Structures are given as C-alpha cells and as structure tokens.
Length: 328
Image 1 (cartoon, rainbow, N blue to C red):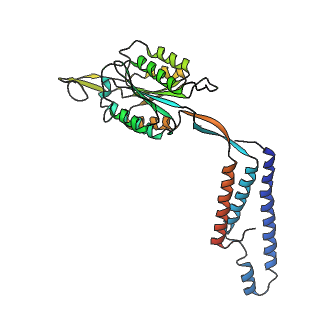
Image 2 (cartoon, one colour):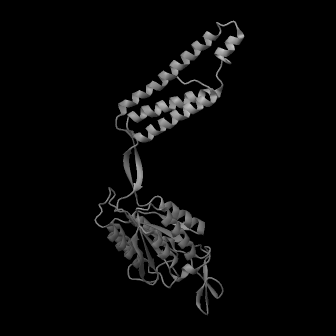
C-alpha cells in the first residue's frame, strides 16, 4: 500500500492526542468523586469509580474511526486484481480414449467435465471462454464467448474418442485465443490478456506438431498455458467386444504423462498441476478461475477507509447506547 499524500498521515497524531486528553479527563473525574461525603450522591455521580472493560468499547471504536478517517486524508492506494480488458481463456481438453479410465471417479473425462463447469461458473462474467478438444485431431467446440450456457452445453457434449494429438490441439487453441483477443496490447511481461488451460492424461500419439513446437508458438503469441495432468499411475483400461471400456476386458495401463505438460507450462510462463482425484481437479480449476485472466492495477482506496470510519463511528454510538458509556 502507498499514499498519494503521505504528509496527511500526520493527522494520525490526533488519535493519541485525543486518547491522552480523555485519560486526563477520566483521572480528574475520579479525583472529583472523592470530594463527596454522601455515599448516595457519590454513587449517582461516579457510579462504581472504575469503568468496566465493556464501557471502553465505544471509546476504542471511536478512536479507530478517527484513525481510519485520518488515513483516508492521505489518499491510500493499493494494487487491485481485476479482470483484464478483452481477457480470453481457452479450455483445451484431451478427449482421447484413455479418458474413459475410471481411476478418477466417475471417469477421467467425467471429472474433467465437472471441474471445467466449476471453472466456467467461477471466472468473471466479462471474460470470454472458449472450448477446444483434441483426440486424433483438434476440434473447436465453442468459440470464446461470455455465454456461460453455451459453454456448459459444450462441456456436456464431450465424449472419449481415439488418439492424442496434443501438439495440434495446443496450436489450434493458440490461434483461437489470439483471434479472440484481437489487437489487445501486451503487458510488461510481453503477454496478451489470453490464456489456455490444458488438461490431458497421456503422451502424444498422433498429430503433426510436437508439444514443444506448439508451446513455442504460444510463447511467441504471448499466451500463458496452464497444464493439468489428470489420472493416477494405476489407471487401466480394458478392451472388450465393443472396444475400450473402463471395466472388464483385457487390461492395459494408461498412465498420465506430466513431463510434456510441465515443459509446455515452463516454456510459456504458465504453471503445471497434477490431479489424481476429482476433488483435486475441481480445486485446481477453481483456483485458476479466480486467478487467471486478471491484471494488477493501482487504485486509490480512500473510499474504503472513509466507509470503515463511518461504520466504526456507528458501532461506537451503538456500543455507547448499550453500555451507557459516554463518548467524548
């Protein structure tokens, strides 16, 4: 926190001055009461002599109100996080066949769908969100929009398919994010107000571009990529008469591959996460929903201190009325 007019902080000296004056008056009042010899008159004038602790509450609230009002004169400023102008987030999700695995309940894809729905509900309404999937190839399911119902419908339509074209999927997501942001200027770190949240559970098996080639394109475009490796090392799938199935059939392992995902995040300036439960996936998406697509801005918050002073003063008056204490 900083102050536009720091010299006005000298007004805070009023607080100890008022406190000192009140203590002096309280001491004089105590000396004055001993001049009475009639105990009934003394009791009516001085009460019990010492203030109960609760009777100091109105005074404490009054002094806090005075301090808050004095600080407001110095025009305090704080760094506030707020949604970036023309901010866009692209949800990029793996819908390969291994997403049928049930090591993350109900299935990997089911857990991902629930977590992405949480993300859509948490991110500020002014932020555009798009949905891109990839399996054997990429597919733009929902172009970036502020229409949350369209996003929920798109998420509900996801079904597991075949291979894992991770690099191609990321490349398409980069193009979608860059087009949605348009000509928005870059920040001091060279990033545009666009980000990609990539969830996958396996290594690349299809496609033209490698994950690192696509990551280099994201970096050149100024887009951070946040990656999530979903699944456990004990995940398996079966192969039955109707193809891949999470239950029955001949079993084979489908372990997640966090290494390329971590490399993508590192190259683009994002962060990488590991989710081995549905609850963990939910927590990651909730965190990202309240943190990405934001920018920091310095803002004067004098009104906050003025409002706090008003509330404290009202509290002081209310406490004085309840306790019977006197305000200065």
